[in-house]
Length: 171
Image (tube, rainbow, N blue to C red; front, side):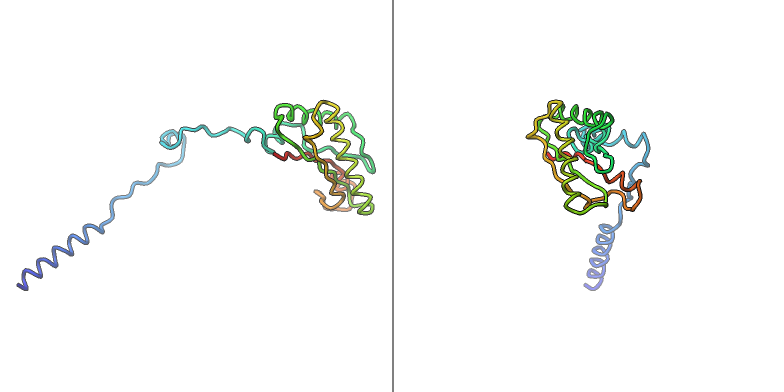
């Protein structure tokens, strides 16, 4: 009987070890042109660029999202008109999109003065877009004054970069 138990134990151990033995692992193919064609997953095409109508699409499609201004000014010059015209064309392609135009100022001047100046800058950009046919209900304006600089520094180059109106898509 002892011999039968010994044989049964050896058989059980052999089966257990056999079940635990690792199977040979297959590694994925090396990356490269041939490997990318062998993928059997989803057949949906991946977009080559940003999602149509997104903020990234807006940035990629327009001349610029930013209009810059001279010191204490909020007038739209010829260069600004070109930028805003390209924004108007993009908005024409996406009639359900709304935008916010953010007005900014440099660090000089009081907080209240710069908030008012930023608002005048944002409204100047809005008024131009409205003049070329964009529905004013699609455009919100906000002024950050000197609270959100993109260039840190107390020099003319930094100040010039901070005097701006920036267009941001909302929906």
